[in-house]
Length: 219
Image 1 (cartoon, one colour):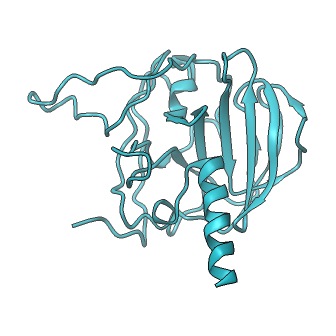
Image 2 (spheres, rainbow, N blue to C red; image 1 turned 120 degrees about the vertical axis):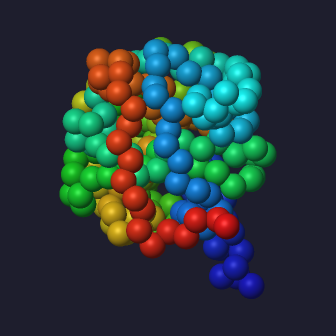
């Protein structure tokens, strides 16, 4: 009983920091979906973005605060492959993917995408997590999360864009690949972290996705 309570507690803390639930980490309840191409601003959504190639797809309804394109670098590499895109759940605790998974080898430096202050750096449910509150992004501020990371910073550290937060750690929840889970929140609302990237970082091209091995898709 005590072990079960501890497991639920750590899962709850991990969800609060990164949006990863056990179902998300296993990938059993969420399909691999491409993330929508980033623009200078992005709004939250309550359902996966419709396919623009589908003439019957409804227009997406804007909801929540806009996301300024304040990033000055990718968190890993120059333009990493996206193994799994942002797929917002229809309900707060429903299946989905509350961030993006970026392919990168273990030991890769993980960098702050924009200036801010480290609000958390430590281990949650066996994973290293770093959270950075972004400077000048309103009230409550935008918060970026990075995991699994072996932190090299502490809570309260002021960071600039490109500063190293730590190195990519293992294990990963991306099947046969090693990946960084990159998330974005404003208050309790989960947002698409790719929205932070200006066009000059994305070349206005859609993200490149790789297959995730060992993660079952729903029937």
